[in-house]
Image 1: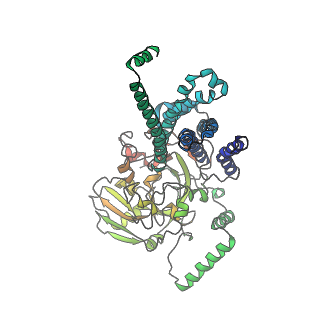
Image 2 (image 1 turned 45 degrees about the vertical axis):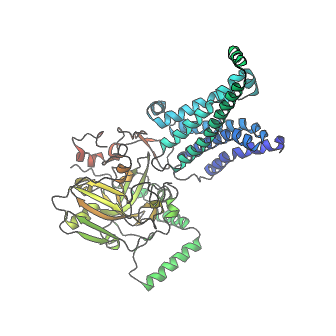
Image 3 (image 1 turned 90 degrees about the vertical axis):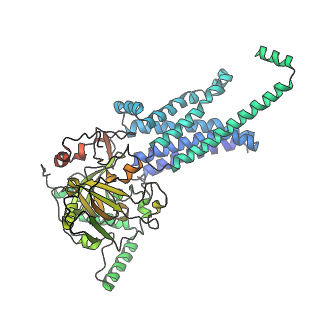
Length: 214
Length: 318
């Protein structure tokens, strides 16, 4: 599939959740508590896009569809986009800029603390998503962008902690995230093993020099 | 006990009949459908004139000095935003899932430490002196409504069975029937739903058994055929679809207390100063309003009920 044609389509598809929400709001079809619906919807889509972003790497490697990498940044930025809408909804529509109550929430309410943390951790990732930033940061870019694991974990905990009783939905996200993270642990472990094997095959002399140059 | 008499409801606050009827029609869907249902109702009325009252039947009731004159939440919101875990944990689902819930036959057994235990048929209850009670309803989740209930003071029912001096608390139990309550097929809560009140709370004139809403029998998703309404407590104390009321000498354990004792206490009085462990209770969003409003102590019923809790540490007894 030619990215030139496909990419704008994916971009538009990512905007569907927002369009749907706007359409419902315009038609006053958001139910009895519209602000809660907006909060839930934007929060849910933030999590969905975080999961999608984390799916790109395992999927492209397992299916050998290496072109998929072209979509990772877009998906990640949409996670940030919906996260920002979620955050804005809370600050503006829900709390109506009541900074006193917001500060208290962030400090005192664990589910808000962890949600707020997730959002703050997304900021450096969004800010360093350009080609220029990637080139400038070099190896450090990859290190920095591992923060997405923390963001996703915090996001799922945020969801688990806010639910009153029925944990089914947040646990679905927890399960998906576990699989995605487990894949990385397995890959990392396998790589360590093969590295050790390679090192053991080298002569003791070479091994020593390898350590010395490290 | 000091009972403050609220101002009478100005007639302008009452929904005009025309608007009310058009709303009902809208809710019923197409006019043809309404016609068909009405015709069906008429026919069954001829076939069995003593047919019991079903959801949507008009009720006879008197006004009450305990009603608030605040703007009432639209019926459509009251019937499409329901915490009714027996049907679903999603507030938007009970409206549809409760559609075919059958509330006949239905009896409420009132038993325990009483001289004259008695089983009430729901239709006998509907023939008692009904009153409209327009109350504020504050949900523990931080939203609120103003609901025109129709019901009877719980004290009227309790007086009828003559509680004896050993009765200290009242324990309420909902129907348990996973075939009719799809939500009971999972153990989200320990079914059946159980709630409790202290004897003086149960006998308080504000405490009612609601059998109607907006002048008609209770919609299924709001707790038909009979539910508890205690306006100064969080909404979840208002147990729905009641089948048993028992006078006891122990403090009953509510379903929510059982599920999370550190979050939901026995009293669960609305209190802006005592936060839920996970969120603040200082403010609430009135359904239909944009900005939040401050939550009032005892949900604004302090003048009537604060004396019940004199000397109690409300932080401890949340």
